[in-house]
Image (cartoon, rainbow, N blue to C red; front, side, top):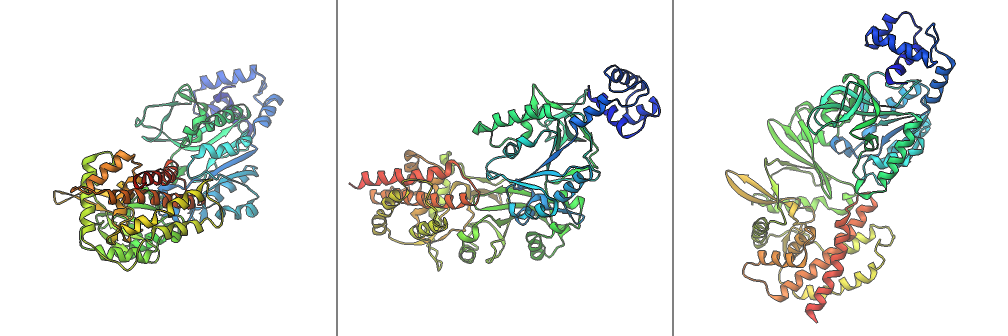
Length: 583
């Protein structure tokens, strides 16, 4: 039975047959095609001569009817800044109703009570749905580092005769049915350059080249048993390959340049995917989620109304914070919102003191507002700014010249950054759990033994950036002149300035040759052996410091992959190098 035949059967199930012309008008096909398909259905035994459904047709409906649904709600939804700092995207309200509750109610309307929700980010906020609607929550612990392919893998045994639904969908009309006869994937009639599929004349979804205007992918899918079994096998195979961690689950639907399921096309006005703050505002300008602390702060700083804050888009997810770009009064700005667990890591009052110390010296970003209590910060946006390329020696040379100039200002603040004290502090954040590295205690004792050498070779402590890594050096154009600025001063404090040289090395994942090149770029007059060995010591100590930092963030669900492992490796490798140099 093809798609058109199935659609005709579905129509006959819900509306008694009157005449062929009326059936053609409803289906949108010609009378000739409808006549042909009715003849096929009759020959195949699905309808009788009176064009009534037979027992065979009713049995087909029973075998393929929807039995359950899976809602994917694990992701962070990075494009939803600043809303996602307070609420997971599935609980965003439109017309006073959370998106996920509307989906659940629409499923209940067609008799689907067996509902599985895959959660991850802010998973606790979904707990109330268990009692309220009788749903099942499945936790995806890898939601940060893996895409929704892995969410579907957790529930692949439930995808037979099931709807798979993203949680950030708002449907004006109920898109679900009591009866389905084939598998489909939903797209809209709206062209979208981000889509990689387009509906062809057979109502199949063909893969198209990037940026060529496909049908907007809605993400709702229905799978009958036969197709579900194939998809489940493909999902499992894809998940067995670590290189597929960022894939969407739809990858399992593709075969030889097209999806294995049919297209279901809806009008763009009927189904809306809400990915951004702006899209939510277009759909419901009175949504409670538009009144976030971040937006209220912007309105207070610039004395504007929320509707005057426009062009909101995510900038990046940093290692510590989330940032987004916005426009207000004809200018662009960046707002920083502290990330998960930063209240444990950073003293915002001390950070504000640092910005006061460097204010007006053209060293840092142009700060418009900073809150020493919650860490919110607004800065001017620099067009065409770029970060330092650690593999471009000219970039590195300019950054080290700027860093040296900053250090030689010998600025002071009232607090210091105690590297060894911070190692101990980060350990306490593990709440008694051991390190993931079996030889951690042995490595730590070696690192602590370097303290005597370091202390005996520190000549002066000044305001030091501490996080002077390539990504925090920005090349900007001010009045036709290139400037290098340092951003993100959250960890800054009084310390030996040579710590900043070590920090640049370990973040850039430099080998020893590159480390020595960097030291030469900083010490243009030459670097004596004692200072060079001290910097090697700092590389070892700071490697252990950031390794502990990564372990804490890992417990919060934030993974840094190779960076985390390499920091621990620096601790061990440069301890050995120091020992070789000293003895």
